[in-house]
Amino acid sequence: MERLYKYIAVLAAMLSGSMISAASTEWQLVGDTAELKFPVVFSPVSDNENQFVYTGPMTDELFKVTDGVTQYIHECGANNPLGDSISLREADPNERGLSIRYAGETDVYRLTLTVEDDVKSLKAERVELPKNLYIVGGPFNCEIQNWDIQDAKALEVDKDLPYVFYYKGVMRYNDEGDECGNFMFIPYLNWDNKYHPVVSGNVPIAGKVGQPFDMRLNGEDNKWSIAADRSGDGYYEIKVDLLNLTMTIEKFEPDLIENPFPLAVFAVGAAMPCGWDNTHPMPMNPIADGVYRWQGEVQTGDFKFLRRRKTWERCYVATTQDKPVRPGEEYDVVYEYSSYVEGNDYKFTITATDPCILTLDLNRMKLRVDNDETIDDSGIDPVQNHVDITCYTWDHTLSLRSTLPNRLQAQVYSLDGRMVSERVFTEGIDIALPRGCYVVMVYNSHTSQYSRFKVLVH
Image (cartoon, rainbow, N blue to C red; front, side, top):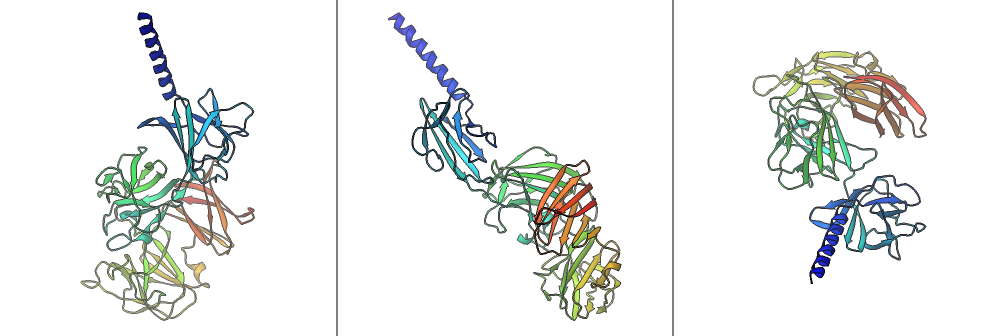
């Protein structure tokens, strides 16, 4: 009897050791006919000791499951684990492996490995994640109140990880509007789905560079926020990982400006295509710090400039009533915070020219009117102009504009030869960059070099 007790104790110890060994095993995939493009290592599921999960990109190459000692493949029949759980068995060295057929390079998959004693199975599922992501909120808001979806800024997707997005640009606490320092992320240009901080209440991001914030889809309508004392104003590089649901401030350069120029300025009036509609005024393109430009067809009539949509106040107007303007000349501009109460509401007037180019320089409080014959004399030309490609910089941003109908590819390099951005565009694109000197290469659809610029981003 004593010998029986000793045998049971030894057997229990062996089984216990075996269970511990199985639970601590690092399961992974190994390439069969070719090396896998991505390292695939399974992570234990916290609430199920028999399951291990990997989520990320996959390849359509053949693979086998391994615990580091033994390799496993499908037991019989189909070797594609996508959709259905398939049983696994030990593989002979010359046997072919499994494959997720037609796996796309931008697809994301969740692989679940179940290990219960000698029974092992694998299931693959395609994870549907948004193809785009936008940042929206007070720092980007051009409304007099509320947030407007058209003010959302598109994030740049990672070249290798389609579920990772980056925002690189300036954020400042907004003096006007609702929730002036708060922001969040949206996968589509509507309010149906929103990414928020996991914790309750608004979450300050001050001093949290490099520390990931957990986030969730929908739920409590809380936001991330920058400080009202403007200490959080400056240049940001933000990384959003939709697969792991994290948001990380990777870089912050403070840039406190007491009275920053407005995010945008809008042209409105009888002379403009929008007419006197302050809900959809004509947005002017910022071409330099405090300099804005609009180009388009006008008709005989009056106009002024709005600092905010959906309000007739907070505007830039003429110094005299119904001030006539002509191409090739400059005119004084004044800012009126409340023209109805104590200021003037003087308009500029114009006769039809096609096209008309309006340049509003708030550094000097001047309006310049141009057409194709006079624009070269404006003194506010873009940095460089190569045939059909125009290049200029403003507020941590490189802007490229093209008159060509075809798609172009832009590659931006630092002076040490490192590529920092690669974008495809038609007509125009804005690329957020840190301060510095860059070489910009523009290629046509046949991948031949079209233009080359050297620019300074400030």
